[in-house]
Length: 146
Image 1 (cartoon, rainbow, N blue to C red):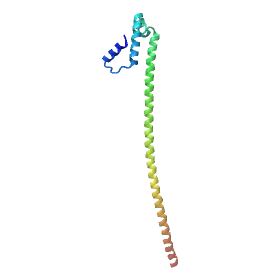
Image 2 (cartoon, one colour):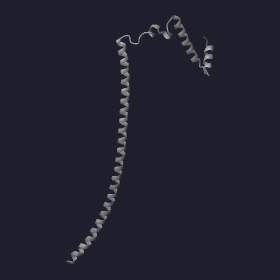
Image 3 (cartoon, one colour):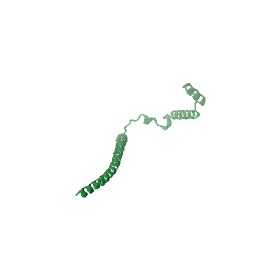
């Protein structure tokens, strides 16, 4: 078959713009398939006797199949385990973040209360000094009366 026939058949299938690389690939596949059929074999060098052979010819074949499924399940298990660890670490990170926010709020509350106590202590100092001055005058009066 030539390129014109392949372009016409591809356009009839709905291809608006046919890429030359696609046409070249289709022609190569057609060439290899027709060459292999002429030799009595299959396309791409496969031999027909392997197509009709049973899948398990020895216990080694069964071992390889079991090994492949074991590798598949091990891979699935490891992916699940990594995902579970990632979820646990994310939750731990969220808990730590929440605790930091709560501790920051407690720290701010304690700072506010300490500032208020400092202001109150300053006021109490002022009142005690004033009371001492007043009491000192009163005690002097009492001492003079005696």
